[in-house]
Length: 87
Image (tube, rainbow, N blue to C red; front, side, top):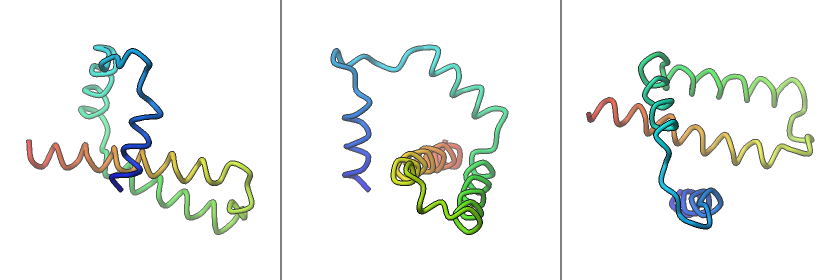
């Protein structure tokens, strides 16, 4: 998991090492206030499995990218829930 997080961080880091913008922080705060991260994570996982079972998604050209991106999103959503529980 740490290797994946390091890979994502490296891929998303700007050449100047810019910090997260205030707009992103604001958007995250709004998201956390109005949406349930655990519910979204659960529903996205269900939707992914339904897609894989019904549409032969494994054969899709974008499948590997989809799985990588969703794994990162699920990790992020889980971290939001962990922060709420511990905060």
